[in-house]
Length: 458
Image (cartoon, rainbow, N blue to C red; front, side, top):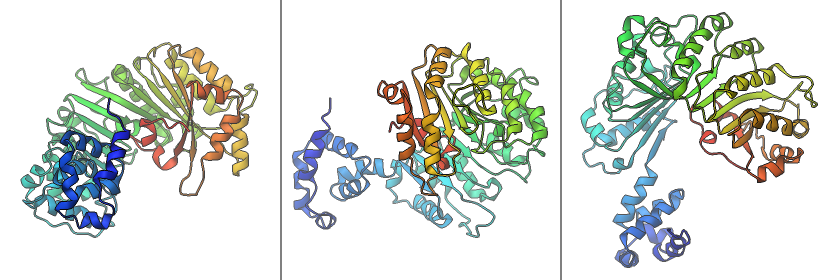
């Protein structure tokens, strides 16, 4: 086993005494590398994968550490502040001497290509050369993008990439022709094995009819993540009631009915149930979003009617956000949100023997920090945890997630301490039965937030 203390002991020997000396390196500065096996030097660089400053320094110290440090520095590139910078990146990709881009594995474009943005992209690009300079790119993510505003040559760039994952998050198709959405499926490359469709923007009173293009959507498709609102765009081509050849699997599904207008919930909820019956066995992760984070009480009865009976392989379920106001501390009275939660869990209990983790996302409603902390401390958590454990015999963890607002300077620390003061919670946390999570609201709506992948024990 590799000793993690060894890199730390050797870094001082390898790196020059100061950055100034490093950046003006001479042959003398590199002599210490000759005594270290290349494999060990790679291990040292890998150990520093989260230390950006040191990786930059290593990249200027020797050719070997330059190559290795680039694998960590440029593995994921995100452009979220300037169309000009992304255009400059395309120019770098077009240059024949570009060498660092071999390290890029994931490319994320966020809040680009909007009508309000006046930047003009350079109209001509050598797309084959650009794609050739990204030989190891596997994932493309587009977030908060207006699809019709993407310049044609950049769309060509997207669809000529030999990627395996294509993610659409909050991509706008609203007031444009349905061909924009059809184009995405028509031009997907065979190498693209997994897609994400999350929070696709549209007017739910004018969902386009895609039935004339049904053959386009009858391919084998695996979705890493899908939400109910995006699914509605595909109601005419992915309804099991109208097709016998639906070859779609979904890894993670987010059930969210708040954004759907009240008059369409009654029409669309049966379709969502039929779809979940079809893809249910492929689901490993179910996210039931009761509020966003604010509640529309009129939506709750429709959650109760969703058929989850075929979700037999679900391993993790998130339910939230559950507000704690008006919930009796004795459990004699129950808020509509909590009642909906128990109904949903009851529907899963007899059908999901593989369920290992339940994450309950809550939000205290007090007007100040002191009252919110008091709500968390006084809630009957032990009764809730015990009831959930009785329902799911193979359950390993019950996670309690509390949402907070980073932009308002809200600190999660007092909420953690309040939960730990609740009777029995600290003891169960020490045993690993209960896990506490603090969830920033800006990540709550993402299809792939960091807190969903890593359980942060506090």
